[in-house]
Image 1 (tube, rainbow, N blue to C red):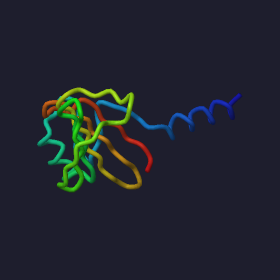
Image 2: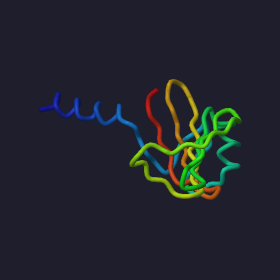
Image 3: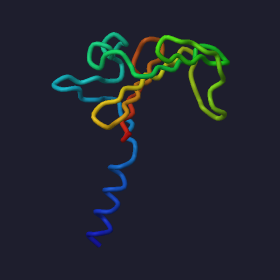
Image 4: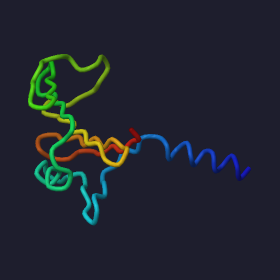
Length: 108
């Protein structure tokens, strides 16, 4: 019984964790913070995608191409997802209208 419980805990810890907060050193990034706070704590994103129209736009390293998001991908107009690589993990910060709406932390 204990082994089964431990295996279940391990499975949950390996999965992506969506949250409304993320610790960066001694600071805490939380939902409701502005985009400037994200840059202050995490710096420039490794990858940035934005969905500002019905077609969606993707930006990567300053280059811009218009393409549709994958079928079935929900998004809000004005939504951006900023990705950061940190210590073998990928942190994705979702920003809507300049405000953090969610943070996902997963293994790389």
